[in-house]
Figure 1: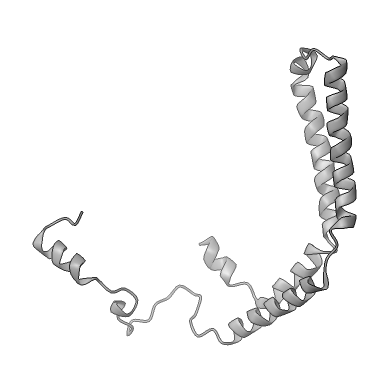
Figure 2 (figure 1 turned 180 degrees about the horizontal axis):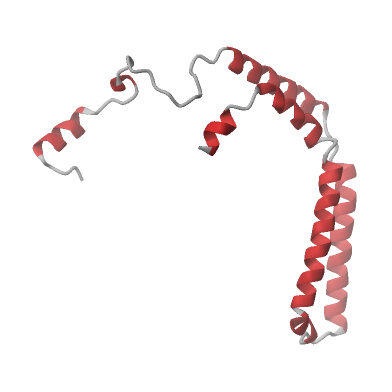
Length: 141
């Protein structure tokens, strides 16, 4: 049922993806960061006894700080390195044109009804070996 409804979305709603993918990424990332901060705080409160049982040494602390620093650097630098190329916009326009052409020239209705005049043999064809084996009562291995 969900897939039938998803296919009935008008083609022009896909234009929203251009803004969500590029400009909306900042908002989505910041909301995800807020949720992650809340989740990690709650998780550390729940797992407090496990954190207290860790034997903290200079090696463990330096490994933890190194991992935290490298992760912070990675997530800080990557948005500046990975810029959106002009080919993204070209691909988006071509995909939008394809959706428009597909929507305009779509002959079949998406309401789930079938045509009574159209025989089932056009859609499905039984193979000769399978039909003779089933007719004779022999199971094909």
